[in-house]
Length: 347
Image 1 (cartoon, rainbow, N blue to C red):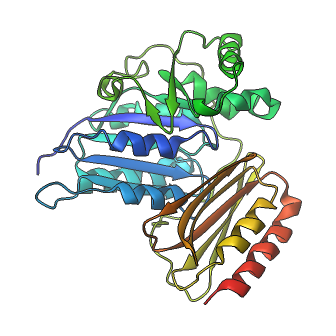
Image 2 (cartoon, rainbow, N blue to C red; image 1 turned 90 degrees about the vertical axis):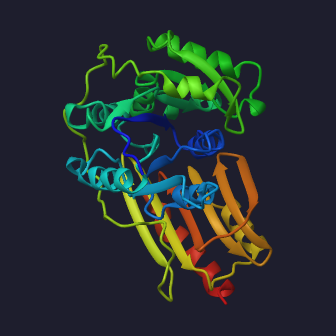
């Protein structure tokens, strides 16, 4: 197997719920059959739901060799902790996959300027060839001051070579205007805007992915922060591995005013579908993501605001749920609600 030097690499940023995983799944479907692609996923939560979902995209060629490889960095921003967790995960992924292309999905609560700086640094010059960087945005969120003024979300727009307005099938007439006005106000109005529906864009993806990022061309980038206000806790583990404990695994993470609560249940747990959905819809959360084994089948659950997307799924090694909230006072209440549901429904 040949070794690909200076692997073409695309960074895909975006706020919570912008549709990064859906976009990556759509990109993976465009992969040339003879190529190997790798995906490095960084989630704010600790239980690795996005990685578990993306693993369903892993494919093999006609000779039964794997052609899509997934590696996760759970629990924070990939550039924190001196970059060690990211370096370990990246080195392992490149060594195993020897990919023709690398897609990087930082957490929506990460520090995008520093992620870009890491991948365009001297250290990775012989390993990574930074290509187009994308910022995905649900333009409707810009009506909310919490999203408009959050410094991390501003940075995501600033580092992008292309901005992709996602979920356009749900926009009202004025929503694209909010996005254009926001970009112009923040001096980002020259960045090209593309649109996506269900993760798919109309443009030639091969051409877009292959263009060199303006960061790799050493154009001036806005000043980087010298350090993060907080460090994230990391564990060097594979969060997409199936749960093996008799009882559920619970993990919690906190940063930048957000708290993630995550559960993993072994496959022997089978949830009552209707009770699960009813409980989740009563929770006041910024984001809800889940991959759940129920008495009506396996389902992925994705919630942002008033929008719910629930789809049947083919297989799951275990059940996983993640809640992202702003109010720490809700933690005890939420744990009680979920634990009560589990104690009733486990089999």
